[in-house]
Length: 157
Image (cartoon, rainbow, N blue to C red; front, side, top):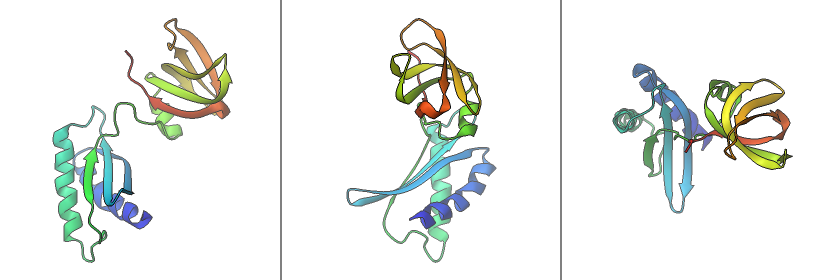
């Protein structure tokens, strides 16, 4: 199914560039008995429902016009934002998140905790530095990169 994902990326990229959006991810998955083609898009000031409809309509039209059909089985097309609590999957996304409120899960305890939430202050090859706000009293915590299991944007309450 990676051919489907690669084909969709090639087809959707010019559409996104035309509207100043960017591609976050594409997945083609089977859930129960149905196939889902999910395209996650974004732009600096956030994606709206109208943006998703626009991309969905244009992408659907282009995919339907292709011969041979790149996706021969029936599927549902979903175009959406990656969400307010999207994962930070790589170095570039971590660096873009500097100044943002994030959630970090660790492989093992650091200072008695396996999770931290706060504002990411800096990132380098060896560590993340964040203003930890999980327990209400802000302090700065330095997290070695080799302890980080997952990180994502978070909503601050």
